[in-house]
Image (tube, rainbow, N blue to C red; front, side, top):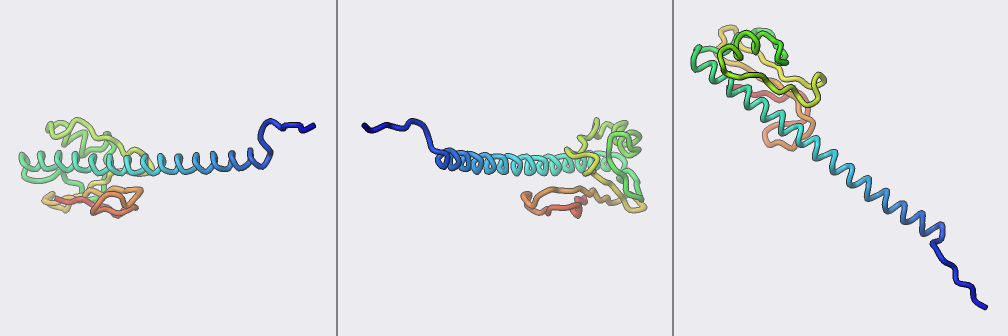
Amino acid sequence: MHVMKRGFSLIELLVAMAIIALLATTIIAGVTHMQTKSRDTRRVEDISQISKALELYYSSEYRFPKAETEVVLNNVDDILTTTLIPAGAISSISLDPIHPDYTYRYQTNSLGTTYTLRFCLETDSIKGYSAGCSNEKTP
């Protein structure tokens, strides 16, 4: 008499679990990378909006809001609250997606004729910029 076994062996179950774990790890890594790239894209868009607001301010005042020492743009700083917002150049800025670990920073020369916006990125995925906090935008 021959007895048929039903079910899976322990080895088969372990192999199936290993395959599922590998697939889950791959999916999670892909999603995490997409989120990181998305945050970087948003940062570059935020910097572009701030730059446009500064250019709008410059077109009416013939100088940029003065900040000879670096200022963190966080919606309570003087650059926004006493200069750009009252002038109608911008209503507020979006804080960095990982604020306060990452911030947008602003500085001008002593005459207010040029500025530098500094910001951090998490990846090298955006052309012309690199991972880290050495990224700058100037007029």
